[in-house]
Length: 102
Image (cartoon, rainbow, N blue to C red; front, side, top):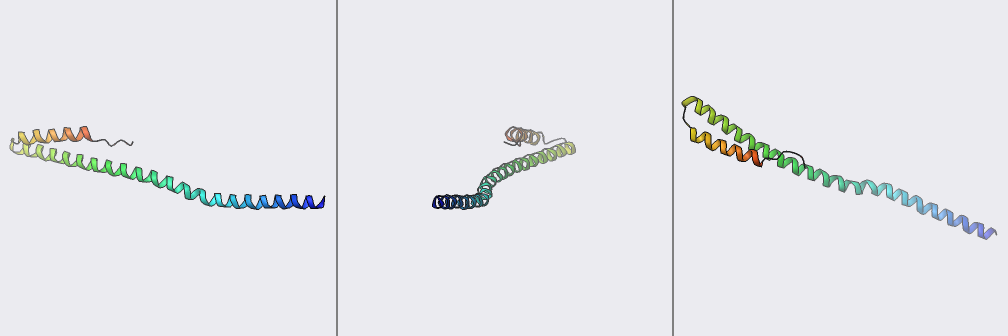
């Protein structure tokens, strides 16, 4: 009977040690595995933000050209062709610019 009790206690002790080691390893590995997911999400957002900034910069340049063409037209009354070209460029830029998050 004493040998059986001793064996049972040894088994329970072994299970406790293995369970404790597994818990420590899980607590150490869980954040490491979560970092990969977080980095992938951050890279996706960074790429989208870069594209949005690039689109806004192109649109800003087109708007500045439109303002410059309007100023030139106000000064000398000519440059109607330049205004038409700028209008067409602005329409293209506005139609292809998407700054909404995906």
